[in-house]
Image (tube, rainbow, N blue to C red; front, side):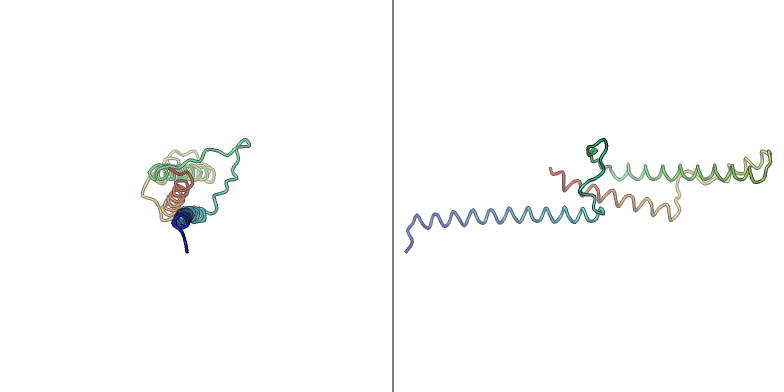
Length: 143
């Protein structure tokens, strides 16, 4: 036969056990979410990108910033390719005729949209990776 003090002790132990199990479930859920996010970013963690013996600041960017950056890279590559084509055309034809030079410049691809399918795929893939990186950062960095 249990006394009242024994029941109180048992109740306290059960409450504490319940609280510990609840907190363990929250921690387990958080760990699983972090591991899933890490797997989606191709194993970004643990970080190994040391700069001067230290880990650099982990930065995330908004979607518009990432899109603008990738679009500027593509536009710069288009212009560089057009310049190479123009120079090759001039060398191959071995002429000093300004019409050929002007035609090479006027036929250069546009520096901005519309993007080709491959360029749009690159933009979309980069945005997807940035979103995944931001999600992982949000889970790891905490509130």
